[in-house]
Length: 465
Ligand SMILES: Cc1cc2nc3c(=O)[nH]c(=O)nc-3n(C[C@H](O)[C@H](O)[C@H](O)COP(=O)(O)OP(=O)(O)OC[C@H]3O[C@@H](n4cnc5c(N)ncnc54)[C@H](O)[C@@H]3O)c2cc1C
Image (cartoon, rainbow, N blue to C red):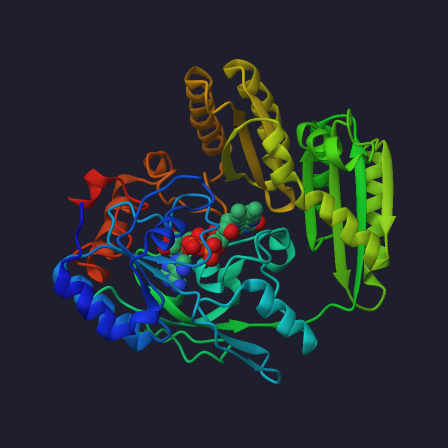
């Protein structure tokens, strides 16, 4: 259904000028999908440069009841940037200002800055931006903030929210706000709007600028890779490493299905291995040597089949390359990946792993798991053939089993990817109805006409309550 009348189109062109707006079919198609592989067509794509332009667009959209969907790089895994109800896709890709304050160790970024560009710029000044979603070479700071993205470094360094000092944001009704001063590390005046907006999945406001905290760059790094005969033993190794007093900068767990998929093209002798863990430690003053040795001893005690410790940058990069290859390599295992990112308390990882094996057997589906086990966050991929409806149905039943198990173990159904559309049917499993109702009231206070990213997080019938 078309929602953009001719006078509205003319007004959009007037606000942005023709080179920053597209009604062309090829652009409409390019901005109609995200990493879920799902699609929904917008009627136009806008490329604003400033908060003032965003404000004028949102004021008009609010008055006319036109849906607007903010979009970074479209790498989201839950359908967050899909324009489910048509209307406008608002791309942030031309908002790429970046200013660094080396002395205060802060950065100011336009929402469309690619995370990798910020981390490289920080590194050139001896500074460090820790949040590291695996998509960081493509995804944007705005998208990371909207999803509160995490990554392998979460255990030691936290996730995106831990580095957001303030946001410049445009409300669906057009007001431009700055949530805090931006360069102070503390600030408790009024409600924590920065925290509320971070992780709000583009439903409460369009982030136009972010004020971010940086750290000094760690001087040393060491990496250890250990293989095990079973996933359970590797999972216990993860628990024991942290119990032994080491907080690694990354602590990743990889199951045998993922290792086999990677080995099929990399040929590094990982096929047939039950599981592996990657331990990265960083720091200064020789601490990394002590920590990696402690981790090595734990792995040995847990019966590791093989342990490699890497110190050279080149070898560390190669080993991380194998970890990064898992997602694409899994395409060989099943044409449709039901990709979930559950989190349990770290000490319940082994129970989660046992339960996953039961779910896979019970539903007769292949499950490939890997992820940031150090913080209890496991990416569980239920692999099915997209052309076999019966197998897809079994896969979806396995997803529900997985969520039930996760909640029984005191966990959450999403640690990184958010709710979007793919999980909106399930949030009632985790959140009490009073909590959901309060969240809907917050949404209505920010967006009384429900124009900003409608159909996300909350199920459609709830939007009408
Ligand atoms: C290979 C791969 C690996 C990944 N690895 C990780 C990982 O390790 N950790 C992790 O957390 N995620 C990961 N992701 C998921 C994804 O990259 C993150 O969710 C990322 O933060 C999305 O950023 P984006 O710029 O692509 O946003 P998009 O996908 O374009 O949008 C995501 C959501 O943010 C909203 N949004 C975007 N920009 C703004 C803005 N300026 N203001 C308000 N709302 C906005 C959109 O409306 C949408 O709801 C991965 C994805 C892929 C494909």
